[in-house]
Amino acid sequence: MEISSGSNVDIVLDFDSSEETIDVRSATVYDLDDKRIILSQTSPPIGIYSIGKRVNVTYLVREKDGPARYCITGKLAEIVRDYRLPGSETVQALLIMPEPGRERFNLRLFYRLEPPADGDVVLLLNQEKVNIIDISIGGARFTHRKDQPIKAKKMVRLILQVGEESFDVEAQVVRLFPVSGRMAKKLESVAVQFLNLDRNMKDLLSKKIRDIERKMRYRDIYADYA
Image (cartoon, rainbow, N blue to C red; front, side, top):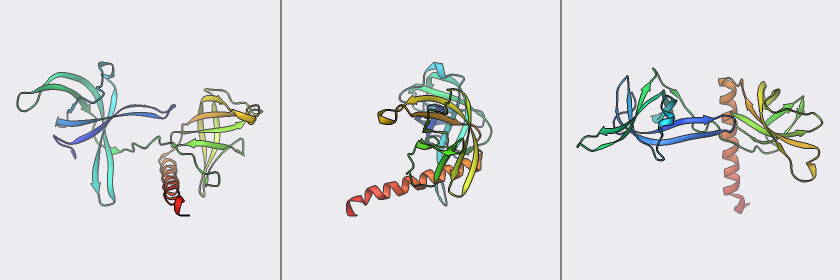
């Protein structure tokens, strides 16, 4: 394995794709082999209610193009109350039963971004362009006209345009929000979860989000010198 005793890792305990939140906690590797990984207890500590959950143990690897994050997926099998460290000290520890293999992992999976209005990330509903409030590879929030009602928990078909590429996207409506101000009677805000983005679509959208973020940061840094 690319991690060993003493390695620092990040445990992705779980995430909620509808809320686009992710629970990440840092830990240290105490011991490992092909059948088990023993980690330090995290802060805040992982509770017994998480025993039996699938978790991702993520770590950084230095590659020629820079650091890359990988993960080992496994089951949290036990919280050991009195794991003995070298030197006879006993501590709490987490026992992970890993699955074979590893894969790339992106902790920014659900990073939300408000794209500029004149950008090249476009979302269409019923062939009409909607105003994107924010978007990630997990889903999006946008406003649309109330005269074409959408129901929570229902499926909708969208068209996602990223640069020159265009994709048919299946999405589930997670939540509806009222719009404040003078457009309250005409518009409502919708949060959707993308369901069928394949690897190429995710990679393209993720790259575009990073590019937009980089440009926005550059503009903010040099705004005072304009």
